[in-house]
Amino acid sequence: MKNNLKVERAIKDLTQEGLASLIGVSRQTINAMEKNKYVPSTVLSLKIAKVFGKNVEEVFYLEETD
Amino acid sequence: MKTRFLFPHKYKKIGWIFLIPSTLFGLFVIFTDYEPEWLRLPMFTFFAGGIDETSYFSIIKTNVANELASVFFLISAMLVAFTKAKNEDEFITKIRLESLVWATFFHFGILLIGMLFVFNLEFFTFMIFNMFTLLILFILKFNISLYKSKRI
Image (tube, rainbow over all chains, first blue to last red; front, side, top):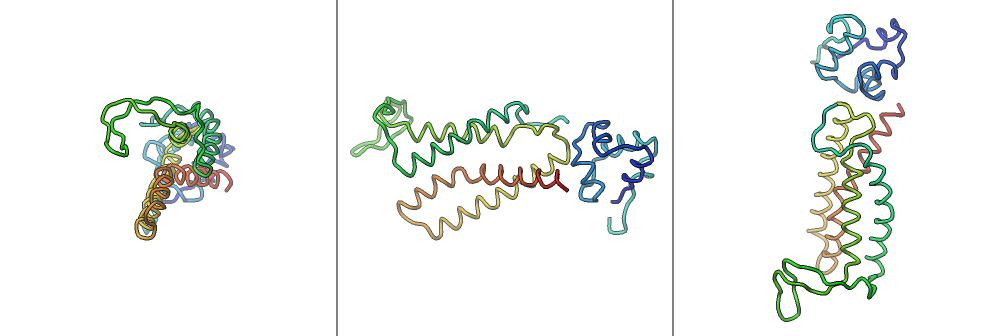
């Protein structure tokens, strides 16, 4: 699964730390997701999408290998 | 995040404070056979082998230096290993699980090697160390992984 967290974060002018504290996770978690090293849970994906005011599908999307 | 089976974060520091001296004391006891007279105390036992007979559920006199070291090491290592991270979340929980699996593989891998290649009294010494390798390996692996994920 891929995501455009980094882009969305830039639009909202949020740091990794800032986004992390908004949704109550550690900064590493945001970093690992942006590096495609971690696939978040449904709950976390929904929270992130909510922060950006978008649907989950606009932030996270499947790859061909999924 | 809600977690099961983990101690609150504040105990991590207490764990580290006790872990370092108890490790040093434990190694000292093993390598110097440290058994001072003042630590020879009456202890209740489920069973203890003697020269002529085994005693069951009785009080025996024994040196508690090694018991002290193991108990302190075990409790402090458990605290260090199984307290929540400062901001425990699902990613850290994943690192925790992966480190635990990794440590379990290596712990029993070392045991297998010991079973096949270490014999007699040396095997007994080996087993004393092997009692603690799971915890030690887990603590090392988990903290290294956590550190790496912070740095990138």
